[in-house]
Amino acid sequence: MSITVIKAGLLSSFQDLGRHGYQHLGVPAGGAMDSRAHRLANLLVGNTEDEATLEVTLTGPVLQFDSPGCIAISGAHLSPSLNKKPIPNNRPIIVRQGDTLAFGPRVSGLRAYIAWNGGIELPTVLSSRSTYLRGGFGGFHGRALKPGDILNLRRPLASSQLDELEQELWKIKVYLPAILGFVPRAAIRVMRGAHTAMFTDASIADFFSSSYRISPQSERMGYRLEGAHLSLNSTTQLLSEATSFGSIQVPQDGSPIILMADRQTTGGYAKIAHAATVDLPVIAQSMPGEALRFTEITLIQAQQLDSQREEAFGRLYLTLTPLRDLFES
Image 1: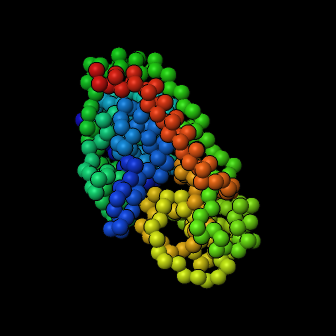
Image 2: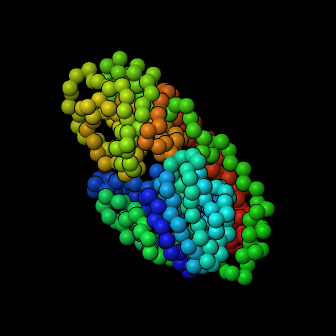
Image 3: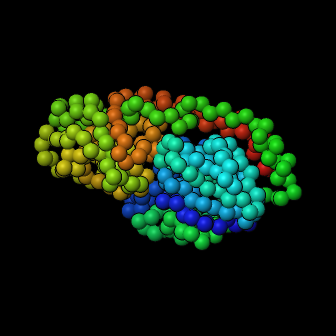
């Protein structure tokens, strides 16, 4: 009923949809950087969307299965293989005792998510099983995986039913609408906020017309951007306020920072814009050194896009009813 970590990969940590309701105590929300891929992987193995998945970054781990199970991988395409044979993203895959999951060269994206039917045995800390690396809690002992770690399955599959289950799973067609797939965009859709008017007209024009390169000093807390420097009309001091995933703040050096999953709980820098929730996965899957551009949309347009995404997830959930029935039978 376990999985052995042979190689840990660059950064592999368990994440769910976040630790909400504790920012007033200084605890970041955290959670999956690409919640779309995280939710998708869970649905494909019959889990609820908030079950913890393993978020792997660029270089994936090598995992040996000591008992049978069912997995799905979504998000970045990192050339996954089972026993050295390529396996696809976005499909439920049966694994047997002794099987080895590994990853190869990056094809696209940065972060992949591995879900297990039934999930991995992890403690709940402040209503979440997400790993908060800086705080050293949540997930698997509050840290990224290391070689030799043993992960315990919460619900292993019966060995006698694997062949039949595998055949039935392959009969299920999985159609992913574009809004749920990994589709790079030419420009990230953003909205103006309360602080946008505090920037000079030239800075606002530069922000929407320039290309910004993702700095190597970018990680789960924030993406630092290199490009046109942005300036305020005056040096007005702002009161600190709660931060949000996708806010684009500008510190005194004029280089914008996109706040990501492990962002600080409060901040006092002016925010020139806020990324639409539907495009946060595009940012999360972008590599340091790659370029981002921004295009303006309205709050109503962002809400419509969010509704379309949720409707797509709802349709997919209904489509996968036969899959969930297989695991419950």
